[in-house]
Image (cartoon, one colour):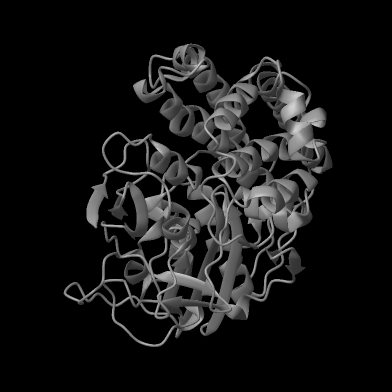
Length: 472
């Protein structure tokens, strides 16, 4: 048995190392290490509750809005505040803008450059893909960066700035939209739709959203111009529709009032019960003990703990590892294409990327409807008083999956603040039952070592790690 350490990875937010035990050229087991401890959960203790709105977005510059929304939801529950209708719509728009921009960034700048590697030079598609997606110098970067920047102008109107907006509040949003601004929002959405339909899909968003099976997807992509079709061609040729399977157990907190909360496993959908979540610290450099629900969770450093190999806790739902992300959201929501991909070959590299691009086609039209539903002149934010003693939970869906904040307030100050990020779920270590996390399981059986194709890279990037969110 040979041990290979892969990392640090480039084109990843934060630090990541993966240790692989390899025998006969195949991975027998994997250990995923989040090597950077940050301590945000401890920073929050003793502070005024509303300080969370300024501090927790700094966990990450990529998904700061999701962190803001989770904190605001937890504080709203603690205060007993219900956001206004406009405030709720505005929050959905802000979160969706960040998530869709993240999907676009992942596909073009993080994921596709791996197909331009010299290891694939003998493939028929390599020349065109390398010209289009080579990091920095590829044709795609010059097109996608302006499109992304134009789309993110939505944040200026909706949130004042990005990242680290303070517009999202427990009662909604401090940024009231005028009639004129609503027109400009619709124009920005139409402009982004044009880029997606012309360059990414080569077809209308409606046509993409209606694809209902893998067979339909591949038939639709055959010979079609567009970057999505280029990905499907390369991924099919490399067999990425059959690689990267973990447990096929999916979890979603629900998003935008568009996709429901729930779980899905072994072909069965079930309602989501937040009480069933706990965190195991067996393999983390954190104080050991029985798994705890995050509402009672603690983050106590034990840097010399034997047999630990990461700073990441192991979230479990009903004692089991669950995968989160766009694929989980769409499987739980019952989209036929996502369900068909999983029921055929499991949660593969291809399925995860397809789900993220599918969400671009599903959510952008919904955003256009939300903008039209805004009522300028009506309140965008409700107000309330912060109690001296309270608890609150904020559950949202970031681009990479389910994000939760749990807080308790005692004598007017934060007593406990715990966070489970999407990458904490997907990149979790082994628990007390020695169950590997989803990525650790997905890597087993893949080729690795000298001369092996970059399959490990594809599987890791299909989960799109955000390591700075993982360890608080």
